[in-house]
Length: 406
Ligand SMILES: *[C@@H]1O[C@H](CO)[C@@H](O)[C@H](O)[C@H]1NC(C)=O
Ligand SMILES: *[C@@H]1O[C@H](CO)[C@@H](O)[C@H](O)[C@H]1NC(C)=O
Image (tube, rainbow, N blue to C red; front, side, top):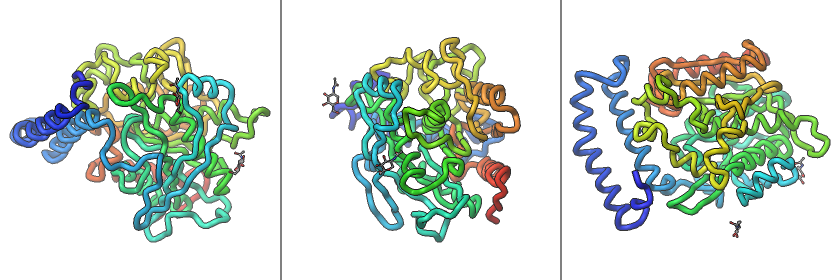
């Protein structure tokens, strides 16, 4: 699809009108009848199959829009009832020389950005200071292909922090980072790698240095593209631990990645791989051309070009490229979630294998929901959510003696 034509008026309105009309008048009615007889997965209910069909289509429309309209972004805190936004200072003093070089190529620097607090039901979202000793906290990097969505509570992706803070009274708060989103042609070229990593570091430093959490009490969390950023942040903290040059906080106590994007190099796009066989997933750009580089990857890799994905462990930690060979020694205890029907399944399994190799089986919990699509965790209606939340709760309260919230 040539995106360039459709982002300008009047083509944009025409295109969106056409998409909306075909969706309502053609696609959904056809699916509605077809799914009475056969569904992409026999275990899916009719409603489930319809929701996947709708999400696939909306994802495509989202690319043409550039970002979700009306979503808040890093430039301002959007206040509202129950919204607890905070400004977090940039961390140029925490950048090592490698990060400075990448930032220079990307023409970005670390700046002040917002974060949004979440808390379990009935509690003010902002944790009272001083922080109770040993209290755990989630640092959230939201999904949305590096190009979409927001950390703001009104974004649908905020279901991630909202659900997590309910699991145990000992981890009652989450801070979601309003990192800068990437874009590229036909939109303005903005905020490529390592911008999101810089902003994630800002959020992490805020939790440790301003709010007063101990790094070992932080659970770095991300879904989809946010999972990629969570892995990059953790890697940066692990690789630079004990650096005499930087006064970096230590690595987090835990890592939680939900359908993480772990290979932008296409090294997993081989005959028979999940990228090609899981073609009923909600991610549909592979369906258009599996060998193409998707917009989100082009936007995130910006001036580096897609080639950097074949040689950079911060971009493609699970890549099979011999130039990456990422190590995970020093990584914390990790929980990895995947959907058995998602295009990224194979790369997420590679991540699991690499982590098990380097930190041992007991440190890595892998949860694969056999009949689920990409990032199924963010869909409140999803039948695999309750069991996943239960497994997460068990992981969350084990190993550091916390009590589950009943
Ligand atoms: C780098 O970014 C600044 C704004 O942050 C802009 O004024 C400048 O033109 C950019 N330089 C290049 C080479 O793109
Ligand atoms: C901690 O925060 C203060 C105030 O924002 C800042 O001046 C200081 O450099 C920070 N220290 C670290 C290690 O980030």
